[in-house]
Image (cartoon, rainbow, N blue to C red; front, side, top):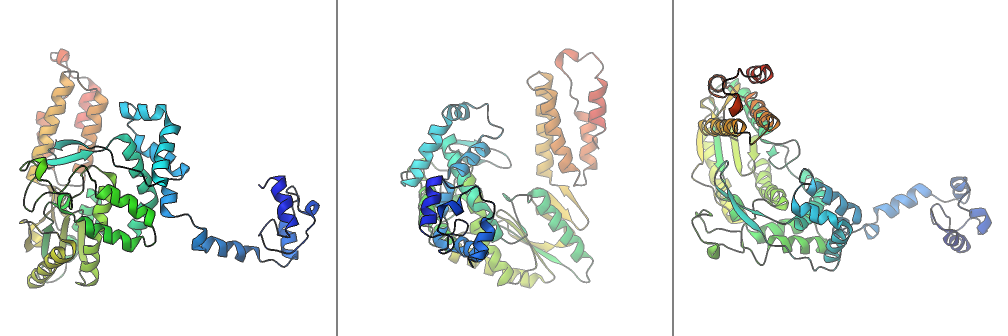
Length: 438
């Protein structure tokens, strides 16, 4: 609501308080804010309120830029809550929260004046599902990345094909496997043989070309110079190289030999988003140029189905050429063509028409993890809630697969009991919980 002084000035200027058009009653007393008939007066003056407001809202000059939406106070506050979710106990989160307003204003000023610099990365290795170098930013930088994500994710997601999975809401490994299994079942009912083409991009996160990625963002966000400056600052980090030479692993070369012009840090929220943005270019090529219908992608893992092996081989050559010449990426040696009825290894499963099984490697890792948490629980290092959370996640995964042998192994080998209770009968609730999961 306008202040009284603003109300009188607007009325004296001969503008309608509702739609802002000139004309109507110039008497300030007739336009007091407490009047309830502004719409009627606006209509009587011959104004078109709806069209006026609609035209103003649609005028690009009246819209804040993308960078302005990113550093808006409401968005930064939402980004803080998202970044801190389930991490409130961590020291960096509590330190940031202790001076929340000052820290958010500091971020806002850095973005307004284009002085934002990416902080130092904490580097470590993870070994699941395979050994990878992970780079984690401090909490302040994670707030910035959440602010970017909240304002750009929906726009970027809308431009992706439906059957692209990974780092998208509601589109994880289970949905990707469900779709491929459905297609395998569907084509298996058709006459003749059906084949699959399985593709995997070599060292994808370590080999993404920065220039290619920034060119894609410029096409998707024209005239958003502020946003493009921010993304270039994050992608072309001036103090930490992310890239690897072709065919090399992160543990094979020293940090001094890593490359600045390629690569994205595994662990960044923006990396997950941009990974899909880059490969969406390949998705569009496969769907619209090659006209492939049965195409499923989970991050850099892809599968295509077709009734002719020769056509799949031509597609493989075309896809490899597109990756090399346009995206400056390469396929790895895991590329295969085979019969659908023999099964496709995809997102940790071996998928057949009508059913799927976890791969031998996945089963081995699950067994090792179960043994580990059983020992942790026996030693009193974790409570039963932690055990339950881990086991329920495995049981949820197993519920989508044929795992009769694994279930029997769990019943025979995995028992959760405290060390001091070794000679006491296992509590009824634990026994029943463990036996009734299947």
